Length: 574
Image (cartoon, rainbow, N blue to C red):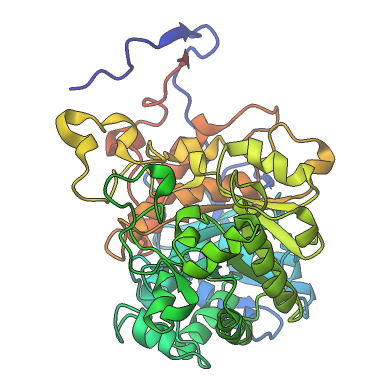
């Protein structure tokens, strides 16, 4: 049995402050993410009437959600792991009445998701009020979590006011390195909605494969995908978008370029530099590599045909996806790849630079994306990379959002200090693939355990739910800078993930992100609440599994049955 704490840790005991293990499940109701305000002064509940119904305005997206939640609350019969202790009252609850102030608000960034939920004692009707249908969907999820047992009972004498702290709360999934079926994507979106996450960032293409069928450029998928059975058709995309709309989840497409485009060479080898070459030639320095992992290829900014093909792709993707954000990637431009191309070699010999090439590319594509009324999202590299980056004059702040992934809060601060809006995906906290080892074979660093530290991956160790929960994405920012942080996303890159492990890689760790971006990670006194969140997350994970989401456990069942006993009561410093 391994020692629980390494010998170099210094442990200060504060048992005089915390004399007993602390349990968070002192009430019977558990809502995840925790609402901003939940008042339930007495542990009262009533039965749900067998004829229980939900009334709401007719709406093309809200009405299917109402029907779905009605079926859920009538049939789920959830049995909590921690047995509730409530007093039953009467009468039975007959109706949940929903009213929406604005039925026309679109599911766009910044839409109002607030709601209030009132379940009075001694009333046959509960009331859900929301500014938009998207807020009503959030309230429906909360109501569903307040119903449990068989026969179904619901908490009463309860009032909730709720609204997210951050408007952008997402999961990024890479479907290029390994393919995920539509049903896997739909299940992920379903779980996101249950966690009040609202952006599915779909990293569709990369060097390894091009699975998206683009109507005007069909050869990209026909030749660049893993096969006809591993492609996403326009009908698949429409189905995913509709599914998201009925759950309040935006579908944000990413077509990464100019890097990560080796798969494009299967259809158009003439527009891709260093395609199908060995990623790190024998004897070469790391700085002379052609890619940061197997799968080489960058679009060539000097070839006019590059823009002909790419603009066809952009136009079709804009037509397929109504989402106003368009993610264009622009990360990890590797100098060696562009330098391997003869035309680029001539450009450099004539005094050009690799940054000039990227500026040429951005200047030829960003205005085109903006012409479709799109806000362009790039990974941070386009502005912050040490070697190849563009001047900020090429990135108009009103049309550009930058997504951070390196150097934690420091790069977030660099982005907002420059006046750009930021989406945070710091790999040190939010990368869900980390800590599973490297996927590259014949790796001599593993010989005699030489690569055993931190899980043997570049971004190790594994990002635990507590690591994610405790990350403050606006730490060190001024109030004005913090207002430029739109929110965050956990990211699952798929070198070592596919549909078999999808649920357990994402859940319940993404639930930790969901709560921190919805209501924060601190209690009313400003203290971090990860201790009491542990018991609640155990309970929520149990409910997700009962709903068909294969979320991994975070503790032994013994801990769940003995709330608080698996928490430490000591403060630990490395």
